[in-house]
Length: 323
Image (cartoon, rainbow, N blue to C red; front, side, top):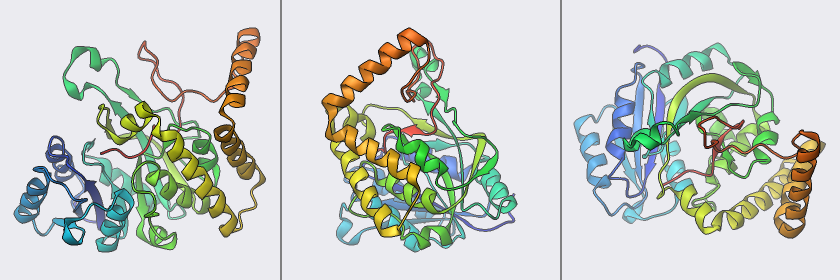
């Protein structure tokens, strides 16, 4: 499919020589032909820079290489904004340089965006991809997100925000956004250089705009120990990052004059839990006891896969963008 509006695919990267070739190839293999790929280098010092430049030279009409002045490392948000500023398409989507997308991703998302002009973004379910290693034990670990909203319909704001706000592992994964919507919210917040940079961006979108939530799967989210979210959760850095995110969101709600009582309640509960971890732990233990007595869970459902390969219900992918 070659006709249709131009889609700008933004792929930021930092030292991704191991995976970036496969990520680029997954864009080149799209069934939808009217796309451009912006490869935004955040100061790489490995071979990923030369790989990206080679692809841009081989296909200059479709692929462009960008980096910051002086080949600086400025963080994820600034790199995404550099891509947004140079995007020519009416629609924007993001692919991480260690992930891949299915060939029909752009075609299906454009079709849905054009069919639902009231939606500013469309999001699909992601496959948590462990089997890329080729190890037999990883094959059974793959699973697809279960989205805890009505699928294949337009969801009004701030429904998605209230759902993923309560899940410290969560973030929207596979989205396509109208460029005018991205520009209206000011893009990414550059004070968030790593963890939670995507949650901040998606919070701004989901607070303001309707989203079409699809049942289809177009995105393979690679699971590996060197990813930003994996490192941050293993080291405990995510607690500080989440606190920064929630504090920022509290200020943003105030500036925007948001009056949604339920949204404020959820936000303040999450902030309180981070500020009082001991009491939060007691509450969690009480919930475990209540579940043991009644069989009814009072806690948020874990987004991670069960050991037997079944999936827990989760709206979104765990953690933040990875590099």
